[in-house]
Image (cartoon, rainbow, N blue to C red; front, side, top):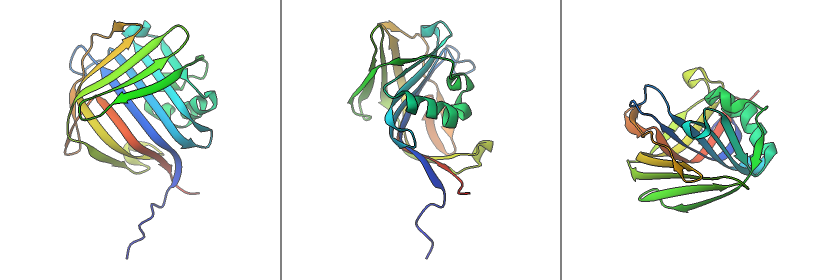
Length: 193
């Protein structure tokens, strides 16, 4: 009987949902976000939001409720996903994080800082699927297992200014996906020494 335990070391478990918007069907991105709800990692637990695009004037903004978790994400995972989000020279703005809704209808993540309110909303869901990308997939040293809830539509706002780009559809293997995804039950893995 095969061993039912994955052979890799767990680095982090939680969520890493994202919204990526475009004016030209994905050829270029107008706004990009990476929203983390970390249930466990070596730096603890907490939340982070990385964002860049038209709403931020092209600059990277980072919000978090545990700076140690934010910096760990930057050094360990964001450096593989989007290099500008891994810049530890960017200040982490303290914020509170909350969620409401359901992936079958609409889900909203709200990030509240002293001077900013960011809202990320996913709606018009597609069929969910499990992403299984072991270490080495796509040339990345780390692997990830995640439940993807892709959505045809999303809305991103910063202080009531709404991003004007749109989600686009894309394929992941044999599955219909999109550029805006609730990525829940996500675990990042690395090979054991």
